[in-house]
Amino acid sequence: MKNLSSSKKAVIMQIIPELGAGGAEQGCIDVAAAIAKSGAHSIVVSNGGYRVSELARIGAEHINMPVHSKNPVVMWRNIRRIRKIIKKRNVDIVHVRSRAPAWSAWRACQKTDAHFMTTCHAPYNISGEIKRTYNSSIVQGEVIIAISDYVAQYLRDNYKIEPERIRVIHRGIPLERFHPSAVTPERIIDIAKEWRIPDGANVVLLPGRLTRWKGHSVMIEAMSLLNRKDVFCVILGSDQGRMEYRQELDALIEETNLGTQMRIVDQCHDMPAAYMLSSVVVSASTDPEGFGRVPAEAQAMGRPIIATDHGGARETIMRGYTGWLIPPADAHALAQAMDEVLMLNDAQRVVLATRSMAHIAENFSKEGMIQKTLDVYAEFLGSGILVPLKSEPFGKTEQKTLEPKLLNSAE
Image (cartoon, rainbow, N blue to C red; front, side, top):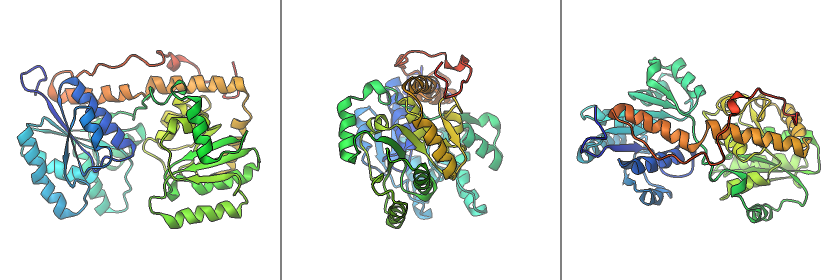
């Protein structure tokens, strides 16, 4: 086993298709920064993206390679390219975060001394044996990180994996950014003006790219059933070229006479302020998500959250204590939950916010995610990689010892 205390500087290389928006990309950058801070050499291989410049600022090296490609010829050529980097940089650990590059990196590591590990970010669809085989690259790691217990169970159910090879490491929320005290009133006002929110309206926010399984039509139906003129709903997400689906949603809004109460916004560069503007946040995904950042971020901001009762949301939301869990694709249940949230008084909202923020700080912080990932690296290296963790930004909490209480209790 290789040791950080030796004269050789440890070299850890992460591979991800591209460096754009998304939880996997953010996690990759966060871990890259921690590797560099620990004194090891941090390398990220990707096909580029607008966030590449962040790596230079955190002291990590970026190598551009078409690892995003699913073309078999390109994937085969990437084997040689990755192996060349491993040998030239004397890489100790190759950590891959996606299926296509996992095939290339797994083969590349086989003729080197580098350890190979993966992160499974989602319960990938298995529609047949060909798809099962393609997905299986993610389980070839000596260690496989699952971003939730739900994803870990998916791996156990669908692949013959020794339990000791799976490590559950939930995604982490940057609490220094996602906290009410970090958002100025001016930022909230700016978002309200940009979105043309009516004065005095209760704002329902549904963040999520415009794809059918995110449950936008369920949200529209629930707004119609709620039938409250004092509620304004913002669907926040890019159509990413799905113009037909966007037009379908626009038509549905008009058909339900909600044109003055609903708006689809393409993007937001200040999500903490968007959360603070909201009276209630909704995650209406009809398919289970591997983790789901929206429920965790909303709770970190002290916002009431309603999410569908499956996937990672079951792990980030404490039912009846920090949020609401409702059946998938159930507009009536969503409308009822929204009505319950909007009926909360100020004292009840304060209690809910306190519980939610403590829960996320205790269990889903960025620092916790980073440290657990570095601990996995240390298993391979035979020595502790320690990043100087920040103290708890808002105080250590004893939330885990509390007995759940009903959300409508202000005690």
